[in-house]
Amino acid sequence: MKRVIYAWNYVEWGGSQIHFLALLREARKEFETVMVLPSATDAQFLGFLRSEGIRFETFEGSIDLKPKRGLIQKLKRRWIGIRADSAMLRKVVDAGVDGGIVHTDIAPSQSLLTLMRMCLRANVFVTFHNAMPAVSKWRWMLWKFKYWVISIFHNFHVFCTNRHAADYFALLFSKRVNRETILTYDSINPEEIERARSHDFDRGAVLDRFKIPSNKFIVLTVGQFIDRKGRWTLLEAAKKVASYNDQIVFIWVSPFLADEVDAAKILRFGLGDTFLLIRSDEIGANRLDILQFFRIADAFVLPSYVEGVPIALLEAMALGIPCVSTNVYGIPEAIIHEKTGLLVEPGDGDALAKYILRLYSDPDLRLRLANSGRSHAFANFDERVAARTAVQAYKAALGSEK
Image (tube, rainbow, N blue to C red; front, side, top):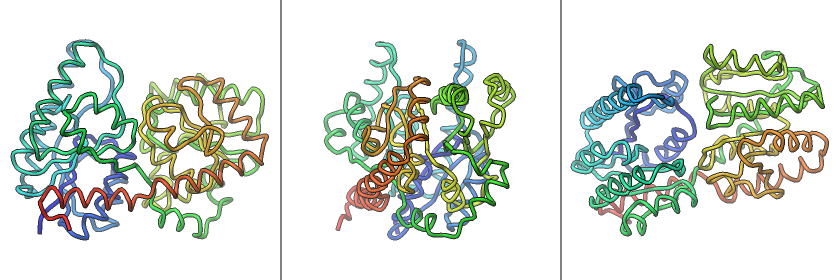
């Protein structure tokens, strides 16, 4: 039986890994499957894999995703990235990739040689979740060259998880790759969503556990507590909201908590009990626990600067929670303004505060957006469709499409 290996070289986990899990669940019906990931990966995500009986292999090292200033720091990060790529590639080879499929999300702009070496052994699929930020003309030309080089390999294939990403990468890849690029949308697991909605849930007990007032309007955010998710925009909006209304609290669930510098910055907003950052593994050990936690929310907000179609946003929509997000990248494919949710421009804390206050004061609007958002998520972002599409592409690449 042929093998499909899902591999990445960073320890942070989020929607990309949930997307890979969805594909793996379908792929394991017809292929042997293995995940290859850094040994320092968050224990909660490894727990998800164990709970589903997913085989995984780990390697030492990982890339550093934090922004760097200065030439020395940037060169050091690049060296760390090269070492992480090499360690990942060795583990992929050890896992038995020859003649099978490697599916990753590393980009040619940073990992061209690694992708080329993978292509010498297997069919390689890369998933792109969002366009990249604007760069200088010389860097863009360098990227064009790298993407052209990898396009020469006819066993190199591309998935994009939204139309915006596909249109962006069409500017970089060859005509052959663009013609064969397949959309595998970031998506929801309808069965998980329905279990989360129907399973017994003691909202009051959960609120008591985390000392969240039961009589307040709860605005929830789920995702990594990082700049590109709009964390400071949210806190700016929260501060403005608090100056008008003391009945609204903000909860952010993240795989990790703030470091000392970020914690000090949070304190400077003066939000007190109005804002609470919760580590996701405090909520529970499995996906159902996390999805059920969404049910504490009266509204869901994700003010991202860079995003594909965020799975947490789709899950909130599918669970029937009215949502506010930003008019960037793939998000408008999920949120149609005033129909399936509300959109603001990235970094606009004033507009975000305005829409949060609007949702608070208009229960009819909340109900309308909740119902239409739920319908839209189920109709357009079913992970089973994306997973079956991916598996058919694997089979076609191996010459066994049925």
